[in-house]
Length: 338
Ligand SMILES: NC(=O)c1ccc[n+]([C@@H]2O[C@H](COP(=O)([O-])OP(=O)(O)OC[C@H]3O[C@@H](n4cnc5c(N)ncnc54)[C@H](OP(=O)(O)O)[C@@H]3O)[C@@H](O)[C@H]2O)c1
Image 1 (spheres, rainbow, N blue to C red):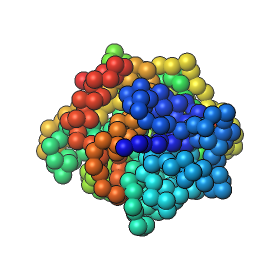
Image 2: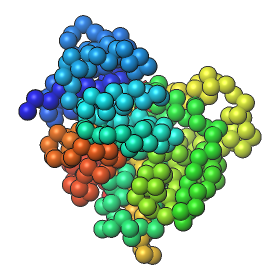
Image 3: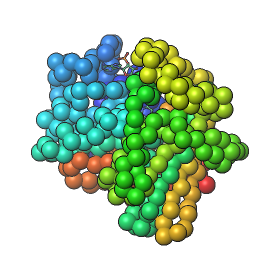
C-alpha cells in the first residue's frame, strides 16, 4: 500500500530530523514537507497552520498521515485531519494545549487514528514506564527527572513553550490530589547517571504529568529538571522566587529561553514505585533532544503503518508493546539505556 506522509513544520529542527530518520528506515514512503513558504518541488507544500484555506493541498496530494511538528494553537490541523479521516500524529502540545486538543478529539466521531505524542521526548516516557511494572495499576508513583543542556540544539518553537508558561502554575499529582506548583521551585538533589552526578532539580511541566495520572491512573506523578549549567538552573529558580518572570514581557522571556547550542546529550530518568519496590530506567540520547523526539515520532509512525490500530484517539504509548519499544530504542545507535 502506498503511504503519503506529510510533516507540517518539516523545515524545523525536529521536523527535518523526523524526515531524515523516517526516510532512512522506510525508503519506500512518499514524504511531503509542509511550511509557510512552500517550495520548488512537488514534495514541498505551502501550508500555514493558522490559515485553513491553505490545507486543500493535503487532499490534492492524498495524504494518509499528517505529522504535526509546529505549534497549532487553534487545532486547525487536528480538526482538518478528523473531518477528512486522515491519520494524525502530534508531538507539539504543552499540557494545557494537549488537554484542550484531547477534548476536541474525544468528543468527535473519529474515523482515523488520532495520536497525541506530546509527552517528553515525543511521548516516549510513558511507554518506558510500562517496562518497569507489569501492570500500570500496581504503580503508586512515577517520578521523571530531566537533564537538559543549554548547549543542545533547540528550535525556536520549542523555546516558546517555556517563555509562554514559565510564570503560570501547573499541576503535579500526589495520591490523586492536584498540587499547584510553578517551574523552577521546590528544588531537591538528584543523582543522574551517565557521569552527570548530583544536581539540584526543579519543578517542570510536561504532559506526562496529565497523561500518567488522568489517563493511566498513577496516583502520584512529579517531574523535575535541571540544566547542564548549575548557575543557570539556580538563576531561573531565583527569578521565579522573586517573581521576575511575571514582570518580564513575552519577548524578554523568549530571549531568555530562546538560545540554541551546537548540540549536546539529553538525559532523562524514570523512577517507578510499585508495592514498596523502586525501579529506575535511565536514558541518554548522545545526539540530544531533537534526535530522540524525532526518533519517537518515527517509531509511532511505523506502528501506525505496520500494525493494525483501529480508528480511535490514542496517546502514543498506547500504540506500543512496551518491551518491543524498549528493544527498538536500545538498538538505535545514539541511545543508551540502563
Ligand atoms: N514532544 C516533545 O518532546 C518535543 C520536543 C521538541 C520539540 N517539540 C515541539 O515540536 C515542534 C517543533 O519544534 P522545533 O524545535 O522543530 O521548532 P522549529 O525549529 O521552530 O520548527 C518549526 C517549523 O515550523 C514552521 N512553521 C512556523 N510557523 C508555521 C505556520 N504557521 N505554519 C506552518 N509551518 C510553520 C517553520 O518553518 P517555515 O518557515 O518553513 O514555515 C519552522 O521551521 C514545537 O511545537 C515543539 O514544541 C516537542
